[in-house]
Image (cartoon, rainbow, N blue to C red; front, side, top):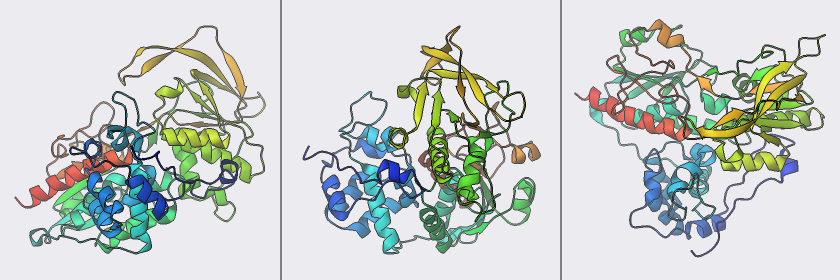
Length: 473
């Protein structure tokens, strides 16, 4: 290897926790060239197979070394319409980086020596944004007479819409909220994904001809069958998973206990951190406990810390997680950033009750059990086993529950012919992503539960190809 990996520069931890500015800076040209030069251009690059949408990683990195950034941008966009977004939020250490030849086989995530593929992707994408680059659109005249509806504007919906539009299909996207972006808008804080970056990626779709209609709930405002009555030839369902899961323990209905979904939506989509400029209030506690170990838990904890600082409250945010740090599904980078910013972690802890002060209905303390790791469960991770007699209490005047999301059944309850599994996720043909209804396809978190942004895009890409094949029959 020629040199050590080039780490991107970041805002100093204590300073960045004072606000919502993006934490990581993009590579400079010199940094990008140095990092790209570390790639040995493998004959059979495993990194490509590690990317759910199949970006030609080897090729775009080679184009960076040649300073041909326009070609690198085109190479990425051949497979991914949202490189600026993915370069920021993709869990590369579990995907393309993990498959890098410099990563150790059998490791749970990428080695520190792996090529920083996502930061190189971001460098190229930011170059494209600064220079307002456009990539070639290969429209197929045979598809121009067809109209497809895309339900949901999260990563799956955006990807499917982009793939169809670039081939000439007329696409109308329906979003239930007042702004497009889905979980990218309401779930990911601006210090990880700035709103202007998301806006750029969505505007790019609009320039490709995609029409986006907000404040429309398919299944309520418009029924699924009515879309076909309006002339759509096919429908893609990218509904996401928007119903929060809870712990199911006593006291969980006390005031100042939020689902991470509500907490992050209030802040990211509705601007609660700018109250009273934005008219969405949010309570801020002195002792905040976040329960969970995924990216959503890290986002909630880091947002909570910033809200405490903005409100002149001494920062005190603790993450409770039932397993150890090694089992946490969150990105290693987000865990590292959370620790740097002063967030505390309590591992092998299982909450069993929220307590009030017997005078008010607000939470005041949290009672938990210590755990040990037992045998692996269905996820392959060792199961947390509560230790008898290990109860303890901690101060907690605000709690955020980040233990996963479930399918929203608004559409499926109105459409009984749309088959779902026991978790209320839509059942699809894994080869085509077609549902039990002809010409209706689905992808993203509504199929198989919560996943990553790029995994949702991979499913949408597969669905778009099947849709176009169906249209041309």
